[in-house]
Image: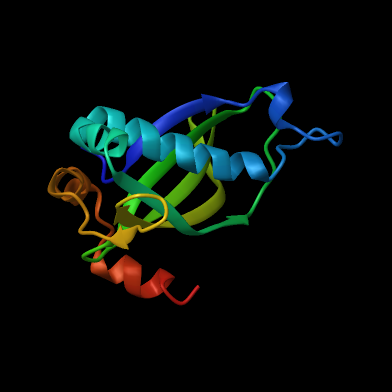
Length: 152
């Protein structure tokens, strides 16, 4: 079993700019999509909690680009758990261009999420749901990798 959760994506024309490469905001959209599909597949109970009063607030999102991709490129978006605290989760994302059996890392991203509960006028931090903690455990980045990427 791989140490990452993966979604595959074929880039469409609507995701590119006038020059023909992928518009940067799409990388952030793919992070969200990967996270959502992970919840649907591995932590459906958390989706039920989101329909009640659980809220996942995105605190920070980032993406570093190494190479361009264009329409009809095949992409693997790979998500790992980088950090887990009592109330927050930090995900790491690798964007890998798949072409004729060759994998090329084209971007790397991160996303930090806080778990909150309560009405919109009075939300307070809450513990990361146990089902989400358990679902993320197999995808935890090793301590060595966290130490080398934490400063970058």
